[in-house]
Length: 343
Image 1 (cartoon, rainbow, N blue to C red):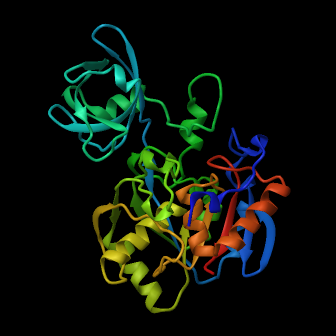
Image 2: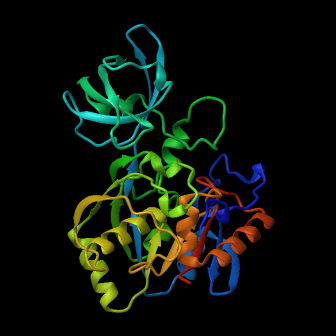
Image 3: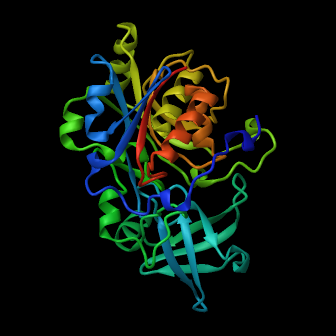
């Protein structure tokens, strides 16, 4: 498959620039078999099997975009790739840098008490630079002075504000570490969540989620490794549900990648533990865990759209996208959502 096989036409005005007035107000398309139904996100429990186990990603978005200054006063904008708690003096970090070509090894960047020294190109991600923390603590600085890293297709004047700190975050976010929201979870209010049987897992979303597929064959696309954790309680709950034949519903592509990545590494089982997965799901992938997917509408030629097409079938998914465009759905991170079953 080529990236252009995942193309569709979207009018620019349907790229959501703001969230829905309330979370449950988002529109929701339900694709079950050949049928397509149009409804609202707040009615999700009515459109899932009554015995479904719903797996959510409880990673918390960190305000990981930070403006720093070099000793000569030149400003630089960093997007920290792995904003984990506990990073202080002596620790290393990776960041995408706006204006990276103007940085030299040994240059120091400062913001408040945080001092970073550039040590070179990142050996894994050619887009990133490697830094050492010389002074200060990373996460407290980001939380106090960083910006929520809204995707580049959300174009506004000024920096993201306090509303974005609240709305570009799921209500069940717990563990800080993502630089992009697991956006399928942005629609769910307390009453909706209370009506579902939930199993939280964690996948910290990295900046690779924003990358276009600049490859001839989609199997060559890489998004970078992302850290995950599956608790003992959630692993046991998922295992019991699967033994009982209950359908597993993943809220979002991130929960799907975590579930299927763990299962692929452990003989089809979702086991407790922590690690990292660089799984890229392409058409033909053997899904072992996820039966239904709840997800937002994704960019053309993206790895996220490719995952949805792998689960739901390329023709069916692209047909649903065409109907969503014609029906005026709002797309991407702050947009509407869909439910789709496995083809």
